[in-house]
Image 1 (cartoon, rainbow, N blue to C red):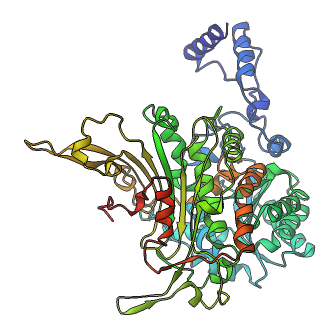
Image 2 (cartoon, one colour; image 1 turned 60 degrees about the vertical axis):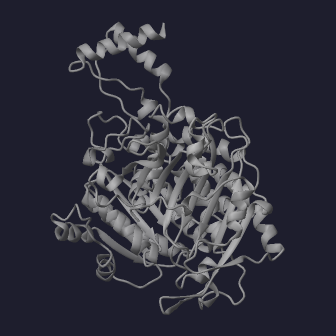
Image 3 (tube, rainbow, N blue to C red; image 1 turned 60 degrees about the horizontal axis):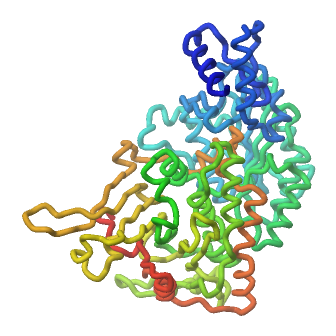
Length: 596
């Protein structure tokens, strides 16, 4: 019966798409056309679509649907209509009517490094590309005493256009700066946030729009998260649209502190208003991970313990703390990178196929992965800390040489660990996570090493080291974004000599793009559209901390000293022993990068 209904609906749309309006259930997309009564056959289609459609409206969207264009036509402009990004239906997103709505973006902590280096440039890039609504404004809020003009001078020094987007760059910068305003205040002061609300109200009223949406980015230290979120929510929430708050990591230091932060935010905001941002999930290659796996038949059947021998997720930087040691020492590499960035990538990589591309369906599967994992053990962990080294006639400083680092600190700047997922797909497959500072190269990548070919007819041609001839899929997140597959081929000639070569997709050359959008651009645009696929849910954060909290407490209580490694080296020797324990060789240390 459903097949007949589906065919009937498709036939009607194909024959009369120009004259028959498309009807959507209001609870599904927040849209409804003003229609004349439909013929019986079309009412059948309407009812069948109601049976199969899923609701995408969160509590945030349901409360604001009537104030953000519910009742407007399907042709009304939305954020994704700017720049021809028509993906609302694919990701089951709410549609905003920007003809009648303004958008205010408040950067709390506007004088900080993150705001100047990432947030303002990302907002300008979106503005330059025409991806923000016509009535868009930026408000800076911080303790520094600045006028609007002084604030605009600060922002102006951070703005630049991409190489591929130089046309009218100066003109666009000036237009963007005219939309920027500043309100000084303290993060724990109700009066300060009331003044910010007054300024926002004046600017929004001058735009002439009926509704106002507001978005807050908390670019501030974690000790003032709750006070600032409370001030924004209690005194600056819009009365006519939606209010969303972006929280930047760290989300606590362990399970208890993370839970306390969650309770503090929940006292002022609903979960659907909170966007916990992990900028690594906004990287182009991470966004492409689900596309690569679920839209290519060649990969999904291989994505299991039957064919995959191990998975490595590697993050390395070729510089040290460089004066940031005071902040870094409070958290260390395990909390700063592995527990959030790398674990999130692991969950996205290993999850089961979601029911749909809707945010909650994807996040449900990620949580299942995290809950299937066993907590990290100290025996499966290696810690390191870089020391000084003489190189090229100069001394490269060690971690303890950083004047902002407490003397004798045991905080690790390198960590590697083995993790396991206890489910039918991944049982027994080691997931090796590695992150470090002051290493020999800057790199972030996922390496999937496949099993050896059973009964390999060419085994004798590879010699005793079959690992060097195993197939390997590499997803390079940064730099020089790429996807390549290592395969074995015959070397041309009359003899029979085999060699490992690469099937290589280099993003810059394949897509003729010298510069890819920054991760913050994607994530800020997602917040504007209410797309939470790449943001961390409360139960997901809880499950992630449960995997690492016992290990972190054990390391700190036992005062375990990290293994020293020279600045600019490949890391501590212990990492190689950890990999060998599971019959694995770190793929990022192989000489398979001729272009670097």
